[in-house]
Length: 338
Image (cartoon, rainbow, N blue to C red; front, side):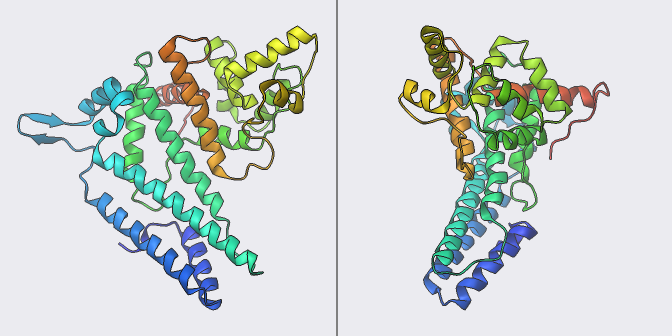
């Protein structure tokens, strides 16, 4: 397996262009380091392809491992023993995807080095490819969270099916697994800057809704009727966690003010860590935003604190998985996994 086999056609073209620029400008050291990273990734792809399919039933002695036992293990033990109970193929699959992301960041850095030398590289932007692969990692995290949630028995069989699809197909250059509806919401949120105002979310909801399709809109309206899910969606909209939103609303109530702007939010919270403010082209910010809310939700769940115990993404994914299941029985309009 060569490096050209593990990238999409567009990614391969970009890599070839970058190598051409490095060669023409005699940047041999940078050329060598980038080549070494690509070769290392080839070996990871080969190793991943050697592991048996997760879909196969494997018997060792008197024990059998299959899709049903995998659901049971991940449902019961994932949160505490994650990497020790997931199949080796799944662990290597994730590592492989992260390595691809790191390599793309490296290519982006190489392009910056060339630009600093006054050389403009005419190619696609690596961060656009990073974003797609980051969404794949986030989708995997969302599905694993659903599997470890004892209150979501209804979606577990569908979540594991989607997960196995991710783990099985990652060795393919063309397979970048995420649910298109979830990707749509993430991408919309990435370009929407919260204004806060009276903290009812009017502007934020409008910004999200105007670019959302029918399925996304259906969930938004559905979630507003469920306090737990509405709170999680508010965190997603405002870029602040539940506790910070409560602090801002208490401030408005105590001061008698009807609205607040970003600078006041910064002063009240004594930090400026509002996720997805301006100039957030780096896809890593997307993951930080999700991971921050996920950790907060897990803490509330463990300690019984007020606020959402699941992220917006988990709630939305559960909604989509159940809709997909109904689709397969012929009762709901089709929602496909890419």
